[in-house]
Structure formats: C-alpha cells, structure tokens
Amino acid sequence: MKFPYVAEIGFHILVVTLSAAIASSLPMIAEKVLLYWSRVDHEGISLVSTELGVASALIILFNFLRLSVRYRRLARVAINAGLVSFSPTRGLRVRRSIRALKERHGTGRSVMVIGSTGYETFADPQSDFHPVLQTCLWANILLLNPYSKEASVRVRALSRPDFTLDHLREEGRKTIECLRKLKAGGKDVKLKFYSDPPLVKLVILGDYLWLQHYHSSLEVRNMPEYVLQHNLMDRGFYMLFYQYFMKKWEHSKTPEYDFDTDELVWRDSVGRELRRIGWSEDSVRERSAERVPAST
Image (cartoon, rainbow, N blue to C red; front, side, top):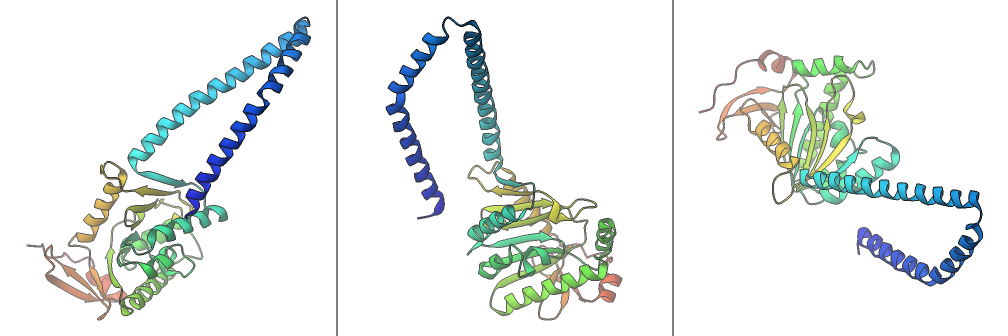
C-alpha cells in the first residue's frame, strides 16, 4: 500500500475518533455553558466580555470560510492549468521531497530535457534526475551549444568568478560522456544543441513536466520550480511547453550530436542529412554561424 493511501485512511480514523469524543462530551459541555451563563447573566462586565468573545470568534470563522472558498477557486484554476506542485525555495527538506517525486514519476518513462549544460540536471551523480535517466525508456536531450555566442553571453550575465566559459564547456563535455555511457549500455539517447538564449529549464517525464526559467542574471537553481501534469482535456500548460520542446527539437537549425563520430549533424524535416562538422571549438566557432540549407 502506498503512503498517500495510508495517510488518507489515518486522517479518516482521526476524524471519526474526534467526532465520537465531541459527541460524548456534549452533555458535559452544555451543563458547563448553562452554569457559566447563569453566573455572568447579572454581571455586566462578564456579559460584555462574553459577547465580544463570541463576536470575535464569528468574525474569525466567517473570514476562514471566505478564504476557504477563495483558495478552493484558486485550487480549481491550478488543477485546470495542470499545476500540481510549486516550490519557491530550495531548502534541504524541499529538495528531498522534489527528488522523491521525480524518482517516483520518472521510472520507466520517456525523458525529454531542455537545459544549459545538463550537468546539474542529470549528469552529476548527485543531481535529481541522474537516477531517472538510468531507468528511462529513451531520452531526447536539448542543450545550449557551449561554443555559441549565447553561451558566452550567459556566462558573463551570471557574473560568477568561479564559473567561466571553460567551466561551462567542461560541464558540457561531462554531460556528453554521461550520455555516451548510457548509449553504449543500450539506452536510446539522442542529443541536440541549440544556439538561442536559454529561456527555460524543462524536463518532461511521461505525463509530468518540471519547469524553471532562466533569469537574465541569476542561476536557474535559485529559481522557483513548477510541476505540471498532462490532463485529458489538453487545456493546461503541459501541452504548451510540450509543443515548445517539440518545435525546438524538430527545427532544421538544431543539429544532432553523433556519438560515434563526435560530429554535429544537420538534417531536414524528413531526416535527410544536410551537413556535418566536427565537434570542436574551432570548427563550431567557424561554421556554426553558416546558414543551414533550407529543408525541402
């Protein structure tokens, strides 16, 4: 039996127990109320104090009911939008719960990722999605080209002395080696690179989607994390970001990395190869700006 069901059963048992306790104590409570009222009925100060206390309690009760209705409406909006979780902070307790959620929904699923270097997302053995990638069915990974102009712009915007362009490229190399090992082990892994400014960090695991946005000058690890779920009515934000991933993945200007030859390969919309270049700083820097032939 899974933990959520145990918690739900325990909650119902607690409610029934409290109801029985309140019902059994009602006669005694009524007797004490009548005794108290007979005592304060002729004392003005006590009577006014009692009336003020009751009025305050009613105000608190009605405010609670009003807020409950409001929050229920907001919860309904969140459900319709597909939002199932929001984590504004990255404390230890929050990180543990998020990691458990990712592992629970990631086992045996397809994985689609948009990120910067991918190292802190899944390549680092301590990262949240590293165990997920080991057990996934297949993975399509889309990362920022570390030799592109936007990679240099991103590093400068962070203004971190300990994080240089060489550091970013080293993380990219470690990510490639991680994916190469998975592919050598029989995993269906594909890696592509984009050269646009990084907009979102996106991980899709089956019907669940993890989302963080890239701030212009802050690290993505410090950004809030949203979890979206695909619903049957296709009216939530899940489909929006899913289609965003697919559009970037299938774009003819997004080259695929060839693990066997260590090259970037451009293809047209039907999969025919247009060109390829070696994966090195000099070759990418010299030819990544060249115009890709239009797909036919």
